[in-house]
Every structure is written in structure tokens, then in C-alpha cells.
Length: 159
Image (tube, rainbow, N blue to C red):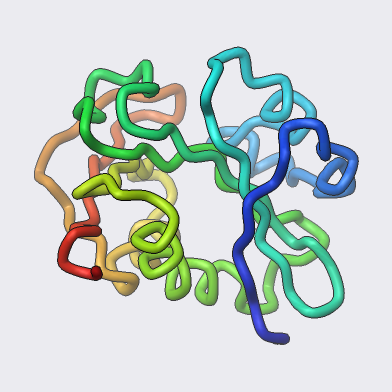
């Protein structure tokens, strides 16, 4: 695996991530890239995951006060829409992303916490987030994939 960097993506630069493929089994957890790029909520930030050779992934952040999810507090940021392209999986990019994400979020956003929902049907993702410093809040919600854990990351402690 090459060095991994995270960076903002302008909303008008979607062509840079349209090559990210989605495996059928991933569709339970994340939407296809074209659907994510058509995000209707104003103010949602787009970000890319890049190794030295290519953009290998994409994710969205709901800045404070933007999220439409009731489990994201108004002063928190919400992580959603994470996609590591199918053609780039199995190379450690998910692990490297989970490790790099806390410092990146703390540097980019002033919110005290970040929040995400991770489906119980996706235990690998849950383990990666826990290893990256996220805490399971004990809250559960229902998603199209079934029950999900609400996880939070203390960004203030990272500054």
C-alpha cells in the first residue's frame, strides 16, 4: 500500500471520482458514486482518499447543523457515504483511511465530535473505526441494512 492522503473535493470536480466502482455486496452500505455526487443537501462537504497513484475513495461530511440525521447533534459533524472503490479494495486502504481520518477531521473541522453509523452487518468497518479511536455510543438505529451502531469520535481531544 502506498501513502494515503485525505483531501477536500470541490462539488464541481465529481469527474475525479466517477471511476470508483461499487461491488454488489457494498450496495447495502453505500450508494453508487453518481448518486452520492448528486447529494441534495446544501453544505455537505465532499472528500477524497488518495494514494500516490490514484484517488481510491470518497466520503462525505455533514458540517455542524447540516445533518438530516437525528442521531447527529447540531454541534457535531457526521461522516457518511464512505466508498473505497471496489478496484482498490484488499490493499489496506480502509485501514489506512481509518487511521488517518481522526487527525484529518480534527484539522478540518472545529466541531467537538464526529458521528457515524456503522451497520452491524459490516463488522470489518466497525473494527476499523474502533481501531481508529471511535467509541461505540451504545445507541442503535435501524438502516436499510438492519441495525447499526452509532459511533462518536472526540475531535476536541485531538487538537
